[in-house]
Amino acid sequence: MHNEEVKLLFQRSNNFLETAKFRLNKKDWDLTCFLAEQAAQLYLKATILELSGEIPKIHSLRQLIAILSQLINIQLKFERKDLLFLENAYLNSRYFDFSYEEEDAKEAIKIVEEVIKEIDTVRENFRN
Image 1 (cartoon, rainbow, N blue to C red):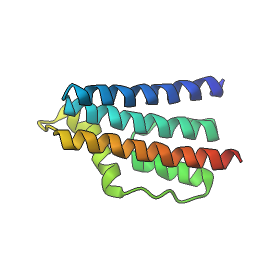
Image 2: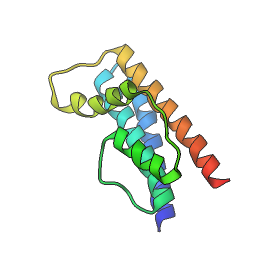
Image 3: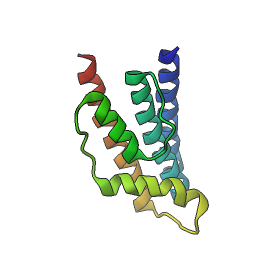
């Protein structure tokens, strides 16, 4: 049961990232940032589900990384400012009178790709 849900979450994460890149090309900076954060959040949740059998009911990337760090007994290191940037994009792009610019959107995608790369390394090491 969990395997199908894990696959679905990883696929959704990938879809969010691909859609973020598409929106970037359409110059939709706010939506790009929001979609990038969602890609990271789902990737972390999929990994946690894969390793623990449970999905945390939280949205904070920093908290998700802390949970994952506990599961694998390794302190994952990401730039706090990068994680805060993505977490803020989750809210700012939807609710507040705040607009992102092209540079922000490109940075959001870059951060998510770095998070995914690091998590993939963790997943590979955990399997071995």
